[in-house]
Image 1 (cartoon, helix red, strand yellow):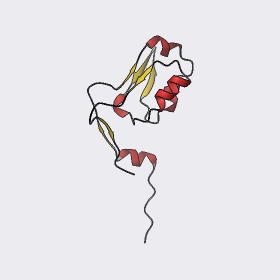
Image 2 (image 1 turned 45 degrees about the vertical axis):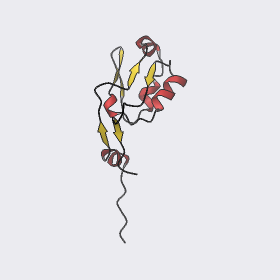
Image 3 (image 1 turned 90 degrees about the vertical axis):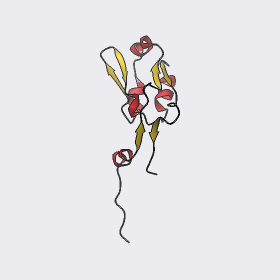
Image 4 (image 1 turned 120 degrees about the vertical axis):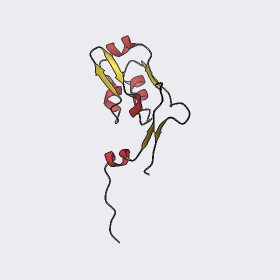
Length: 99
């Protein structure tokens, strides 16, 4: 029996589906707290690159969210606690399709 090919993380994530909502499930409570945050850990820990610092504000591409919650934990423990994180509404968000 032939060995099955090894899939990369990118290959596995590419098999997933995203049901985007019109409203973000991620938001910033106070942008001033983000501006004052030295580490900006939400950017560092998110494997889907949902967060990007643009000029003087945090851009959030919530459509790419893998719903891990690592950004929330990092913001609360290493950052200034400005990120408000929740699961997407109803049937929205990521649908994992590969074990």
